[in-house]
Length: 224
Image 1 (tube, rainbow, N blue to C red):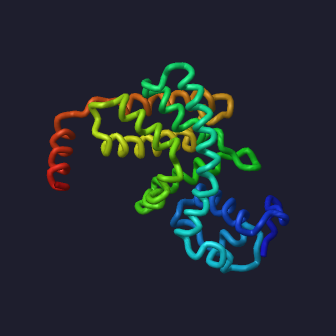
Image 2: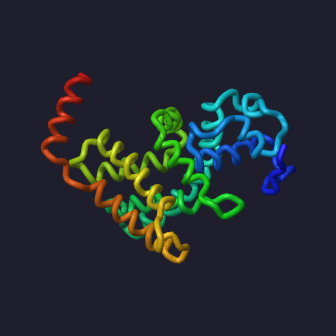
Image 3: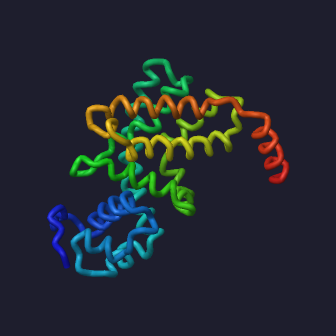
């Protein structure tokens, strides 16, 4: 088995598997990585290490999220408190900052935004977003921010605003990991993140057209 010099042997195997899977899924997508590749990247010779520790892929993905959510929530709480002190809880642009900035601040031991890239892979997958279902009770700060977003945009139905939020998350994260020259230099990172958040703000608050309103009425009547 090839040796991975970035793996620390004194780190618990489960944590190494989580870190390895997060990085590999982020780089190659959920469908582009085998459990064996994750085991190798984690520095374990057991090809069934993922099954032993997490049961299956769904268990592994849940473990990644459960490990990172508390860290993200703490960062979000800090930015939310600052936003509240500034009296900006009714501003969509400020709330967008609260939602997204923690993802960019979360880096691994090599200074990489591995979790943000993993979230992008998850949301870009057909079934990936389903892994967040059942974890909302683990994200009270994020849920509160969404309530604030809903209050700041009363003309947009909450269900549709949530869908816009999902799509804007994909857009914002793609803008970070898919930059072309000359904007792929580190010196432009902060400005381009601000630009992406400005775009997210504009997209979230865009007026709903008549066609979409008709669609929302039809889908609402079908659920009754």
